[in-house]
Each structure stands twice: as structure tokens, then as C-alpha cells.
Length: 274
Image (cartoon, rainbow, N blue to C red):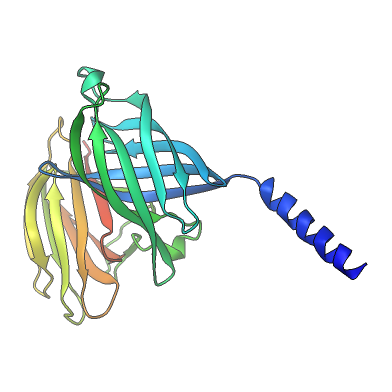
């Protein structure tokens, strides 16, 4: 009788797991196309056992944003394989046949309790010809704002500003098309390093943070995306990477504190206001 009960319970658990509801996960980060550059990339996955479906969003909020269906599978160790299959929507005005569909294999990693997906991809056009390759690094989105490693918080300052929302693309309003951005370490120097990109142009391949700061003078355009991408190359001796970002526009100063893990991509959109 005891053995029967054990078998019955085991079968019940198995049936429950077999009919468990699909799990939804969201990942945010960067896709780096070899020889081209870095772009924001988001995966929204619906995982059902070993199978998964979902969507990918490339270059969110920009003029060439693309939202695409994906299908794939997940192994027992959490690694996933997927491929983009069809366009849901895109802001690309040119011939849609030029779109390069991603086929990726990503391994799951965990650093200090934060889940990552990291791996390589190839791109294929509609004719199945290879049109690109590179790497993907994504951070799992969590519901608790306090846990997000790519969150911004207001630094100690008397300047009156609003707290930035905790999204992949953070918007900063600017009263002038001339913007000065100073990035520095306002604490103990420990070797933090960043890569700085603005409108897909590399401003600094490897920026070593110091107390004085490095200044970037930007010119905002109506036709440009006006997006600065900050890629964490090193967390220094004391993770996470801590950088203070001071933004000056038309004599108005806003200050933000960045706390990010290795290989995180932070996106800041400068919005010109009249």
C-alpha cells in the first residue's frame, strides 16, 4: 500500500508538471553585428517545456526598429536555440527583403543572482543566404525594480530632476540641440571601463572612469535617433560598474548614477524639446 501511494504521488506530480502553464521571460541587452556595430535587442519568450515561441525587438524606439516572430527550443541546462521567422512590424522604409533574420544559440549564465543569456548568431535573408554574424548578450528582466542592474537612480545633488523610468531606453529631455555629457566616477577609482556610442558612432572604444570626468559634446538632430549607448566593459575591482552621468543642456544640469553589471548595455535617448 505504501509503495502504491508513493507511485501515485509521483505520477500526480509528473502530470502536474506536464500540464504546467507556459513560462514567460523577457531579456534586454545588445546584439553586436560583426563589422557593423551594436544595437539594442529584446527577447520576449513563452516557454512550454522544451519548446519556445515569442518575439524579438531590434533597435527599439529607433527609425529601423523591427519586431519579429521567433521559434525555438530550450535544453535542460537552460540554453536556448531560436530563429526569427517573420516580421510583425517594422519602421524600415526600404525593401523588407533586406532584413537579416537572426538564428542564435545562447547559453544561460548567472552572476550574483542575475540571469544572462549570451552566445553567437548568424543572420539569413529571405533567400537563406548568410547576411551577418556576431554575438548577443542579454539580461533577464525582473519584476522588482530594486534588482535591475541597468537601473538609473538620482545622484546626491541639489538639482531638481525627475527619476528616470527603469526601461532599456531612458529618455532625457533637452532644451537645446547642444548637449554636454560628462561621465565620471564620483567615488573610489577601481578600474571601471565603458564603451560609449552615439547614433551608431563610437565616441570612446574604452573609457577609463576617473574623478575629473570625460566630456562628450553632442549635437541633437531632428532626423537622428539621438541615442547614446553605454556598454559596460569592466566592473573594476568592486562590482558593479558605477558611473555618474552629468547632462547639461541650455544651462540646465541633470545628474544620474549608473549601477551596471559586466556586458550590460544602457541606452539613453536625448529628446529635443521646444
